[in-house]
Amino acid sequence: MATADQLIASLQGVDAKSFASEAERVRARDAVFEALRRIQSPWDIAWDHNWVTGAINAAIKTLIDAGVFTKWAEAGGEPITCTKLAELTGADELLIRRMMRAIAGQHLVTEVGPDTYARTAWARALAEDGSFAGMYGGFYHELNNPMFRTLPYYLKSTGFRNPTDVNDCNFQFWRGQGANMFQYVGTNPLLTSDFNDAMECHSKYNLTPWVDIYPTETILAAAGERHSGNADGSTRPPLVVDIGGGKGHDLRKFLARHPDLPAGSLVLEDLPDILKSAEADLESTAAITVQPHDFFTPQPPAQHGARVYFMHNVLHDWPDATAQKILRTLAPAMEPGYSRLLIHESLVSSERPLSRVTVSDITMMACLAAAERSEDQWRELIASAGMRLVKIWRPVESVESIIEVEVA
Image 1: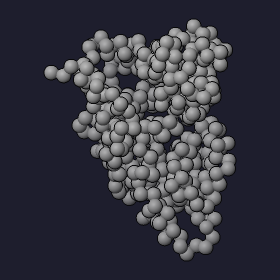
Image 2: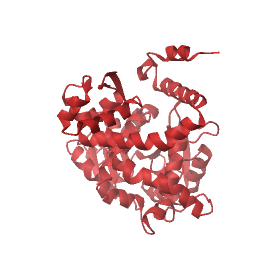
Image 3: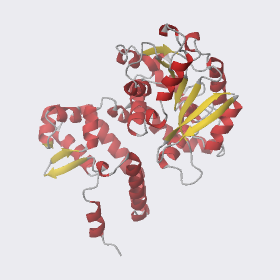
Image 4: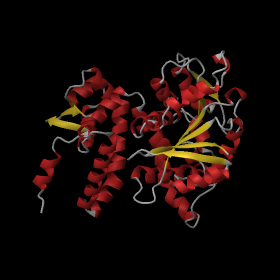
């Protein structure tokens, strides 16, 4: 029988850099989490759910707003006392001390001496990544938290029926009939920027980049072959149209992989309110054109005949009937035999699905009466829209896959 000392010794020195690949890190993390659940008592688990999550998120948000992580970084990022943090931020020293010891208890910072803390990778990210802190702001407090809080009451009111109507679901139960989640995101000043930041971070930290899953060099090769007789490159259709692309983080990944693209090669589409922050960020990026667009309306003529139409976490926001409408609306813009739709989405495995996918599934239910889909469900949806599944590019231990589709 193993002793606590043996277990503790075996874990010393293990961190995110200890593994040969991201897939190996994810495997190890999930195994450690499974072991933790076996070690925990029922009370330990309930304590985490009902006390720790809320209290620690409140402490984190307070410290972010007080400027603790940014001021700490500006002061050099070395181990620091709460007295010094209070001096740097102007916040009450006792308040800072109580918040810091709370997050230290969750190993988010490391206590290295009496009242003295060192940064972890997480604490550094809060200072160095401008979008990372947004997940603890409006995204959590203005959307996710109230959605999860009301979901069980909404489901009870329906007699525990699986929700499928985006216009009559938990969001309306919370905000009232006629409310729309995306309109709420776009018009709530406490949420809009933080929502975009959260989506950027989800793409940056939680997912295998799509350019590492799909052979993007084939996009350029196919476009070059298709338009080899056209000397005027400016009249060519775009290479990639990112539909519902938020801040353009996925197009940036493509551009980083293929940096010498001519102006207008890539098109970022989203609702005008969502694109507000993206336009300024992309002002100097000639290869990317920003195009306000509602994907329930036909593609603008200039975007017809692109090699790739890209949808990242778009269709999981919608029940099947609505997702089918989105696909059918896009189809006329696609050139048969040439254009491809790349759907970058989660697949729910038939056995032991990844927890990140099943948690996302409940999130989709709570906000939009939508769902993550299995491979069979994706095939059915694609066929129902008059399209054909070409191939599923599915990396090992990755949350999301690339579903390659063409018009039938």
